[in-house]
Image 1 (cartoon, rainbow, N blue to C red):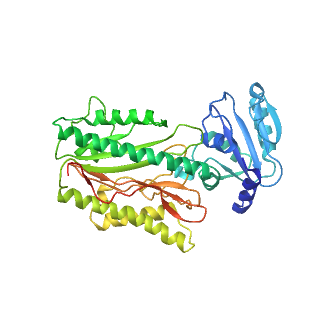
Image 2: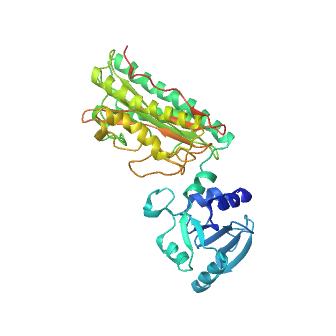
Image 3: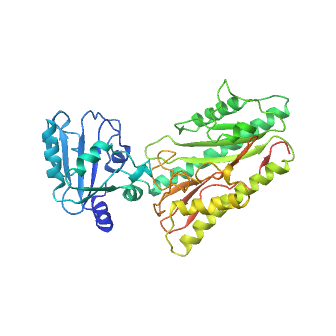
Amino acid sequence: MDLAAIQNALKEYGFDGWLFYDFHNRDPIAASILGLDPKAMATRRWYYFIPAEGGPRKLVHSIERGKLDSLPGEKQIYLPWPQQHTLLREMLGGAKKVAMQYSPMNAIPYVSLVDGGTIDLVRSFGVEVVSSADLVQQFEARLTQEQYDSHLEAGKVMHAICEFAFGEIAGRVKAGQTPTEYEIQQMMLEKYKENGMAWADDPIVAVNEHASDPHFEPTIENTHPIREGDLVLIDLWAKMDRPRAIYFDITWMGYVGSDVPEKQAKVFDIVKSARDRAVSFLEERFGSGQDVYGWEVDDACRKVVTDAGYAEYFTHRTGHSIGEEVHGNGVNIDNLETKDERKIAPGNCFSIEPGIYLEDFGVRSEIDVYVSYDNEVIVTGPRQEEVLALLK
């Protein structure tokens, strides 16, 4: 935790402090920013207040009085609930505007973690509760050089496994076999293990109409065989299996044949153009020194799909924050599911992944983008330029 940097940011935003609160490890953001063990016992409520000026203050339960001992600041201990309320009021002092992991109208659910009752309690002291979303963006979602390097390392593995999967499909079909989506997925997972990866959910291998479901999950029961003439979507994500590592997340398309059908090629070209417009929009803004917000990039990308007549088939946001979780806590590229009004900052990493999902097939192209501390917009891996003709 960089206390001085946090207090400087609080002054810049005009906040009197940042109040962290947790119960049963429900707020992983607090653990990440404060450097706490997210798996340690936490059966009682605790509070940690960082004022814009002065030293931090801690409030812990008598049973878990050592819970915040790793952090600086004066500690107070409560037992009965009325004492908790009294000491919390005293902890906040004369603060009038305090940031918490809260998002008005639940606009940014990644940050909306403090329960409504606790918000009510703090407000009952005459304190205005404001969202910590921009603070989280600054102190939890910006990568260190070591983290960025881990992202690039994971990217090399992900691209190699993607190439391996398409190669297995091509080789098996040429040999007269009919591999299934599930079988290819399981082969990919073996490669994950061999390369020392960590992941929360398994990769997507989806053909034809299954690719029209952005979150299709192949199983033994629902899997389709992969045959010549099928369009194949592969979406894979993972990180190196070590502390503080950052995910890499990509989607590529292949066609089991020598010549990609015209309609599928056309839809991919629209998706590719939308993807590249998002990148060029970012480059233009950062190149001219202008601020750029997540919702604006979504608009720029989505306009390409809309102008091509496929607006109703682009059914998700353009991209998501990437961090220690594949869906991180930083700015999302979104003006569909939410209006993400957070500013994209140097050190942020996120996906760009427009898609068009028709009844009989779906197409998505996903890349990862990192904004360096020199304001350089970096696509952190290869961009797919055309659907791979797997039997060519």
